[in-house]
Image 1 (spheres, rainbow, N blue to C red):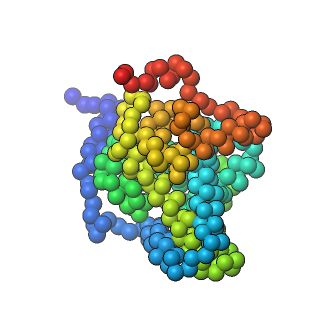
Image 2 (cartoon, one colour):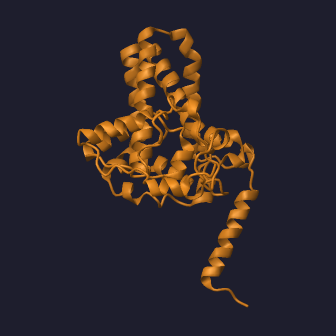
Image 3 (tube, rainbow, N blue to C red):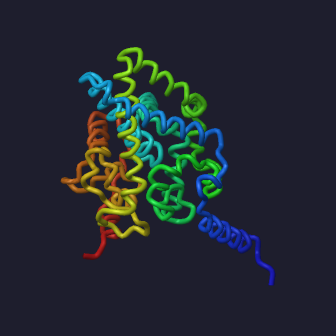
Length: 303
């Protein structure tokens, strides 16, 4: 008996997922694309700068590292994640673009690529098509997935889930020129503070934020507590909340993806939410989304 086109497509999709699940490629078995090489070199360079940082310590350099960490980190959490990926709130375009540029300085990619990957993560969480599932190993979900764009395309397809960003010239511009912005950032650090600013700003500051973000992908799907009955492995990791500006309330986030607030209890520190709330009070943030009481009751775990 022949199958309908819909049934055939479903069968092929299941087989494709199974094939993806069987593939656990060793690093020498995969094809390195130019983008993978650029990403790997950038990561190695940032960590190399970290090794040089202790030999170039100054108090101003430490302050620069903290500023880079904070500005880049909040750019990722407020702009890339809550504003662009989930549309949890709206701000005027000039402020949206400013926040996005701050995220660019975290050296985690341009908004189009970052948001696309994150949306696929929520669409395929913990399945064989999740871009960075810890089911493929802690280090894969933490960092190694970044350097295999071919595998990402194989699992998720092309970046067709960010048409809202692709329509805007600013995000297309950042995608085309991201490398130049990073090089200019490094040059300015070196120009104003020499090796001390470069090693502590682009080294320590960027690396710290990188690994905090990576911990959300890895650690927050392995260890921690669960408050909500999501169908995935997301966890809340309380001790990471300050360093991640509120992102580590990850079970909260997966339960209510579009919520601008991730620390849902008064004691759950969420610095990103405090800033969004302040912007709402002064009239710059609108359409701020929060979970309703009925949603919270429906998602709550039975104790």
